Length: 246
Image: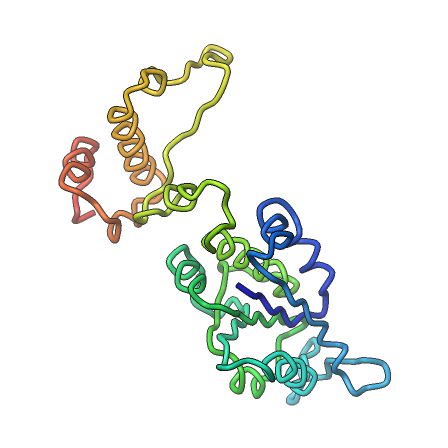
């Protein structure tokens, strides 16, 4: 997986991705990063990349040409047109299903906007996906791009040390993950559930599944509408008061 990021702050992207799991993935070559400074493609002697909006209004708008030149430089040696993700509150909300879909790509381009936004003409020309990480406004697109690259990277084969990790994390089967415990067995009067100490893997697996179902019902019941549920799952949820009509 190669991530190309069109940004005004390439160091922010490099520093953010070069830590923990994604940092190890970069070091091993499982993922690659190409953080491109849009200012390098400005023809203005002061390297300006923004200007006042036509029609008036507050703020500045990123100009189309520096972005176009940066993009063209990235794709000139590619065999096919890549998916270009523009990070914007106006886009579809990013989720695990989208991460899984994007993880199948060999190369992805992220366009990080700033100021009041980006000239609409370059968006129409190069962007394939408009994506948001939530209904709020941030200073720029770098943090959302890092969030998405982190989630996508975890799904790239070989990035996680334990191949089972991605499969059983939150949102697998559209359910939240079960609780986790480690040593000591007792901490401030609270014990690790006995089933986890039993060594009976069948009972442990069922307990974890039930806890995942219970937690999803309590915290994100909306996910159950599209979750992959077995008959036993449905029976257990009904004991908790859940019905498919809710």
